[in-house]
Image (cartoon, rainbow, N blue to C red; front, side, top):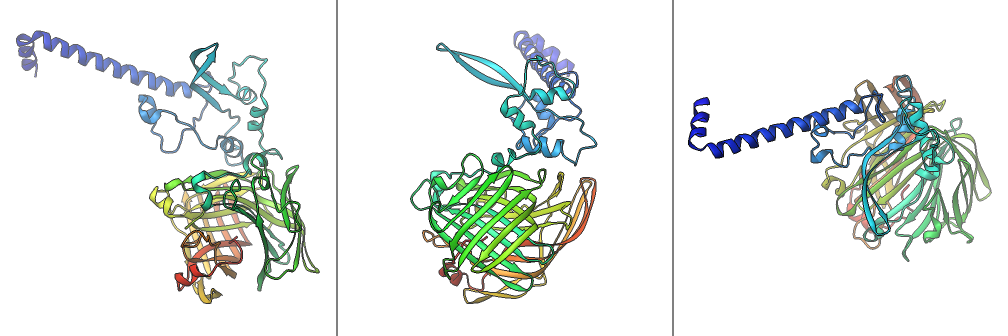
Length: 515
């Protein structure tokens, strides 16, 4: 090797010298990059520097070596749902024994300032002053105080959080015909087993001429077939709260339904005549969420503009009030309650879902999955989730490899056909120190056809399947977030099953929206 180098230098000294110089410069540049990248990572861990701490959060799948090298993969790195991470993870019960203080930092972002026709490029950083000072590493001027928005970020619980997470949405123009959004509430009297499902539903783009709003109310009890009551009416953007929480369907009309947020309490009110029977129905319920028991908004994006959003503002809640049907009043006092909010493109979509609270409302479980061709095309389909929360906040997220349906039997008739229903649902999940085992024994099943879209050849939901709403008893055990979780309680589950004839399912329109 040395002989070859010496002879190359003797024969072509100029070219060889230039090559050696270029090689040396490349090595120097690489050493500099590695040194700078290593310094950045070390500074991120340095508690004496702004933003330094014992723990640095980066997006899942991030390679720290890529951050050191400054590659393309290191550009524009952000942590999604930062509010939830701060409020429920870093300041919640899961890491309460480990995290003394936490502060968000937005650092090194390029900004462009325009002044008198000049454009000035600069670099900006931001933080929440009160949180940074709590970590003991702040060098901010004493005069700096939290702005209104920064103060909201630092809030761990309270009435002001619900409008932030529970607002309504407008679809993209191309998605309007396939768009649907709804508030869902369920209420369970643990003593008698009586339950109610309420869905405040908006189908289509409310900024266009063809959107419909509806309320569907189901009432049931163990061993009895649930009764469903509903009405529908045209709506526009005045029916939905784009800034805050609330929905007003049929405002000012004889048939109307509203959800309003009053000091952290969801107030549900309705008065209408059932579209099928004409029986008068009245709703007056107050749903009070446990302040720390909620999950943040998450939107899954798929192919062809597909979007599916989900948020659970009230994982654990209490309900008081009554639902009146004709002359019969169904009262709920201190009942267990739950509220979620769904939005997105729902054509050809189906889901698995289940929800239960422990008898003392110390724990709650929500599990499920969204299935859609657009998610499969984008590589995001068939992913199951199970989320466990305590009354004081988030405990853990697990991903079961599958949800198993077993003990199949003949069930209700839908569109003239008998559908098969499961007698048992079960799954297990393991993630580092967390473990969970769930078994749901199905006791009652209601089957229906999902909402049909007259502008499409196939049903809007479910891809030609029957929609099952199930009641039964959960057995939950495991250890999540360092806590032993073990309870049995009544709860709900939903899934879709194939019809014996998909053709007959598509041909018969349903009376009401599913859920």
